[in-house]
Length: 317
Image (tube, rainbow, N blue to C red; front, top):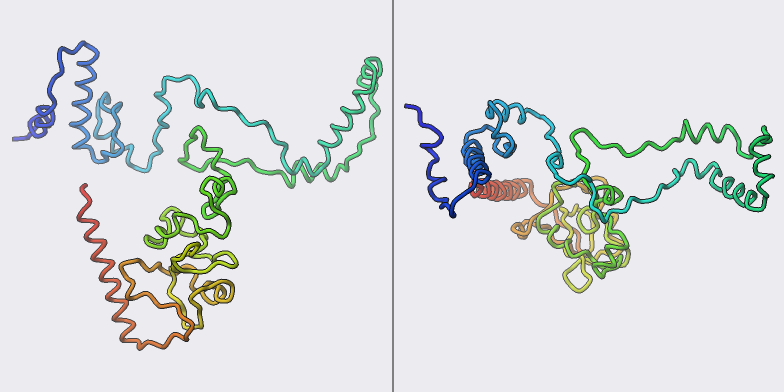
């Protein structure tokens, strides 16, 4: 006997008490909500199933097609507002591209406007009816290079990237670089560590930006700063220090030793593995036997693997 959806998941509707008499519109919405909750439990891709998909004739095949690498429809298609931006949005003024500015055309236009401001109406009409040709003050080769060879390409969205209102304001932001406005808002300067540095040293690099260069993680700290947890300290470097001489309070001398092309993208050392962390001191690091080093690596990998399994079991699918 095949168990129906209503028989198997009927307890979901029984725990929802009715609140008075419902009108026709509310009853219709309630039926759609029940159907949405029932189908979301049986479709192959429940994270892609939406309330509008309940009116589909074949919701399960439709959900399978949506999950095969398709690009979803933007959310604002069902928005009731007739505008994509808020009413308080002010479109920025047009900025002349840098390749056009280098040709000197804006300065030439300014000079022409100043010249026309001192001319009478008769002289302006005469200039427009009978212009003097062949007197260009700009090199034609420079114009050709500016508009054809050195033309700046506009910023285009990648495949599957949707337009979001206000997203253009963060296009100029780069990961790992703190702007002057953000520094002023946080009350820090160039030699003060950011407030999120210690959490990054604890949990590692951001997953979305694994190649970003962040001072204190995989980039040298500013000149004159030092590691440590004292005021204005930059915590601990998240790198396995090489067998070369390194210093505890690194200001300028040890930067070239700690951060180089070979160990710049090493795996971070987590807080739980403090006993395996290499101590940064003024002494030369002694050589460790290969057997002990292999055992330490296996122990560290075992701890990380157990931690991942524990985290995986705690997630409810």
